[in-house]
Amino acid sequence: MIVVNGLTKEKVMSLTEEGKTNYIKNKTNKSTFEIVFFNIFTYFNGIFLIISLLLIFIGAIKNLTFLPVIVTNVLIGIFQQLKAKKILDDLALLDVCDYTVIRDGKEEVVYSNDLVLGDLVFSKKKKKVRVS
Image 1 (cartoon, helix red, strand yellow):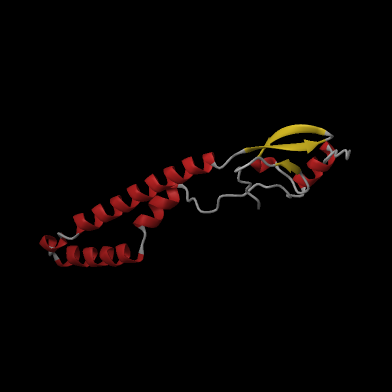
Image 2 (cartoon, one colour; image 1 turned 60 degrees about the horizontal axis):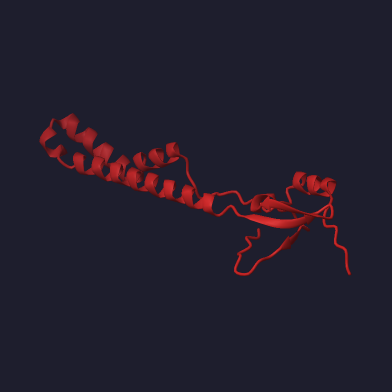
């Protein structure tokens, strides 16, 4: 019978310090501030701002009827992106799974983000393993 000890705690700590974990940083999510900022300060909104200022300067206030459409468009864009951000954040929580590994000769349950290079993982039928 083959005895497998797996990684030691010291080796796991050194691999973690070296960044050799299974942690995947979610780079796709923007902060709420970024979502609002990038929806307000767009190229087209800048053009519409210039046009609006010119219309106000020449006194043609009646011709500013396009402004509610622009404001509504910005608010819809912000709302949709904030809703999508919330859904993606909730889905990211579902991605965290726990796995059974062998460390120091004993079975141990760790989350997928805490797996390190060289871990011996027990795989069960139909269980997906996320690897970075």
